[in-house]
Image (tube, rainbow, N blue to C red; front, side, top):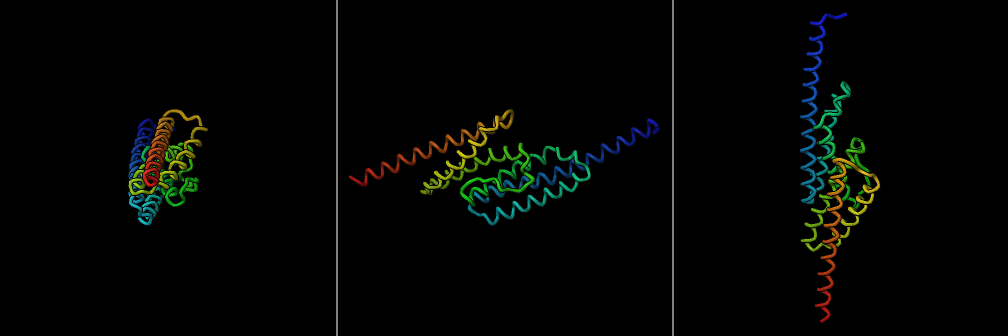
Length: 201
């Protein structure tokens, strides 16, 4: 049986070692989160090539963190890692929307944990609204309809889940995003009708 001194030393060593690992995971996760945010920004500039590169960078940073987790599984609960994954999920879903015109959820398996995916999906509806606003100012009214349909599908799915806590708040924001798009679509239809009336005079 180890002495009290040996036990204390072992605990201290284990604690300090885990602290080093937590910091390493947090650094890699923060880099992944930053790359994901930059990917979203690139998508808003219609630069899908840059966005794809940044998403690949994020995946590499996650792989670095996950290599540490294999040695110490409890590190998967590190807050920075989970926050990074949620931002990554949001970026992937927004990328998918821009590429496909809809959200189908065919994304990196590492973001398919329910809380991560649901949070990312809810947040992605906000990016879809921003994209729709930008395109509407350029006269692309079809984009507003496409955005409304995509967010409506996401909200209908989220409504089935009986969400609580932080995810409920994200869901409520997704519903507000849908209302914004519905209002935009209504305003757009009024303008088009008005223009048609003027043309007919």
